Image (cartoon, rainbow, N blue to C red; front, side):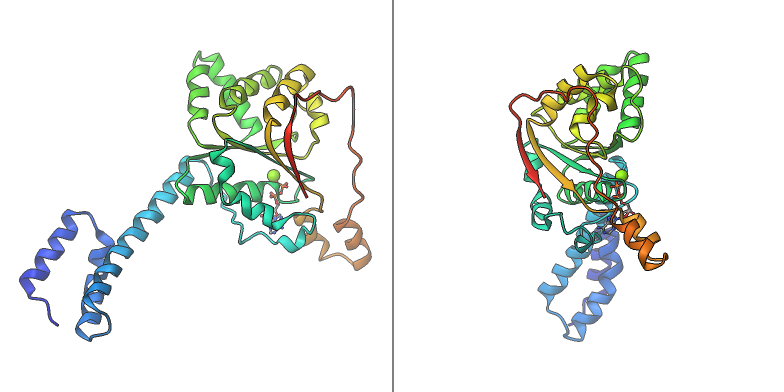
Length: 285
Ligand code: ADP
Ligand code: MG
């Protein structure tokens, strides 16, 4: 089957007019396959549209990842579950079904540095973007910095409204850096605004009992945990650092074993742990 040159020209012009560059690119190749009888006309149309759609989908995902500040991409397929046997793989795969986003739940990843908290948080956020959900990624320090700046400039309401827009907000690294004075209060205003309205993923190397210390204010920590544990899924990663494992591989066996499996740290409790109102918490792993 050979297409008339005039028809072919018109198809090319249509593809340009319709802004379908990828289809234009593959047109010749598909026509040759068609002429050789390797594919049917229906298959040719199907592939022409499929190529265009894949290109657009790829662009959409790339733009959404940039907008959501997901720049250092991690995936679930890139996560070695065998390295973290304490982690329930099926539970993570269920989270990747993204129902927690529709239910406006809060997922907490808790564990020592390097155990994969940020990796899993980003991987779930990437799944969400691919499924067409809006996502925004930030660290607690950046988030509080941006809220404090907005407050100074008299635009706190707008900033909170902006941070309420994404269906999933990831707040990474709670507990690594001390929260500046008044920071807990600003974070609380955001958490309160998103409460039961938008999903969050939080990562922390500190237990909930230590949040008073993290935020330098037990009253704010209690109010925060009250909201953040109400509809929550808590994933505790008990294993060792993946970063250290790589390093430990270079060490002699005896010291490597010590590096990979450090003793479980005892939770540090200073002062009274914050009380939590009726938490509906699903503990995982
Ligand atoms: P955390 O946020 O808990 O400190 P990260 O998620 O940043 O740790 O992990 C540290 C590094 O190790 C990252 O590069 C991450 O991709 C990698 N990593 C951690 N756990 C795993 C794992 N189980 N499989 C593959 N890579 C992992
Ligand atoms: Mg991290």
